Image (cartoon, rainbow, N blue to C red):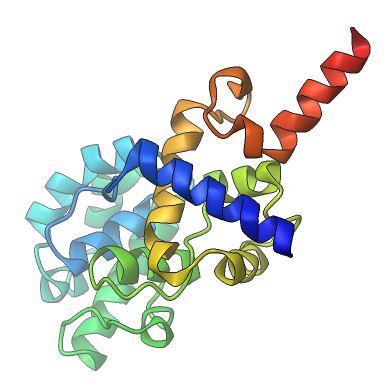
Length: 220
């Protein structure tokens, strides 16, 4: 664990130096919009979500409006985001819950957030860290899952187990930014099908990159 702790500190220092105070990639003006955007981002790119939400937010600017929406109307607006039928159903149910049980306000605890339709730990952690500045854990999306395994920070495959591992080794003050840094890294260097290990600034602290270099060296 001591070696892992040292590695994690180096990784965090390098990520912070390179990416700094990176912001949430989903466009939003309030917590309600953020919940919607994160729910739509499942199995969908952030760019596509950001192209979709302006019209959706204009049509349904509040939980009250969305709670009364017709399912087919919401489906039409979010169709390009994929899995739109289930997402539309969840968005309306989420809004109904906010109106009925939370005075139309997005709650600021993970226990309450995960009670909302379509909201799991990942979505809840994004909302808590981004809007409320009260992260309950490291957000684990596909980028974070893949990259933390490559770095050697965890060997788990289940997102919740990965989150627990990361919460243990990443200081709480970095929980929110750590996932955003790794997402940025995944888009720029650690691309899923063609990781740019030779140019990545984390290569000397990455288990995958180090193993890859040793394998190539032996082959030569």
